[in-house]
Amino acid sequence: MAKITYIEHNGTEHVVDVPNGLTVMEGARDNNIPGIEADCGGACACSTCHVYVHPDWISKLPEIDPMEEDMLEFAYQPDPERSRLTCQLKVTDALDGLVVQMPEKQI
Image 1 (cartoon, helix red, strand yellow):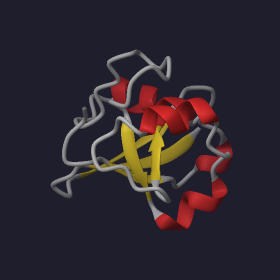
Image 2 (cartoon, helix red, strand yellow):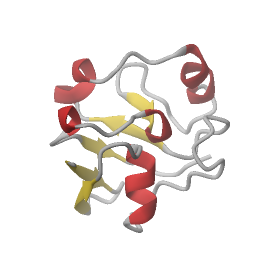
Image 3 (cartoon, rainbow, N blue to C red):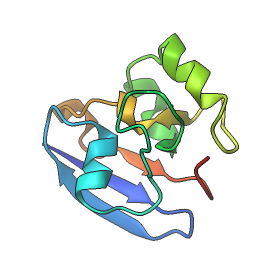
Image 4 (cartoon, rainbow, N blue to C red):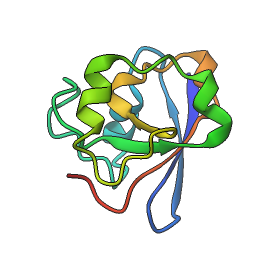
């Protein structure tokens, strides 16, 4: 289980425990965190679960794959360093303490 902090665009923080094996997107969905829409249900076929990863965590995450990179081109104001799709981030103990911030909107 990992404790993940989701920060809404307005600064509201939600700290939740997400079981290993789920994705960061599923953790948001299961805990009713606003700001992550996940329209495709985690198939990496949209960009509506886009977040900005806290700078301390960028190097600790798995490399971005080409499919995710392509989908991020459709995200609202993607950041080449910090943007990730939460459907592609599988929760493990190594993600305990992860902090992500939602963009102003999802598209």
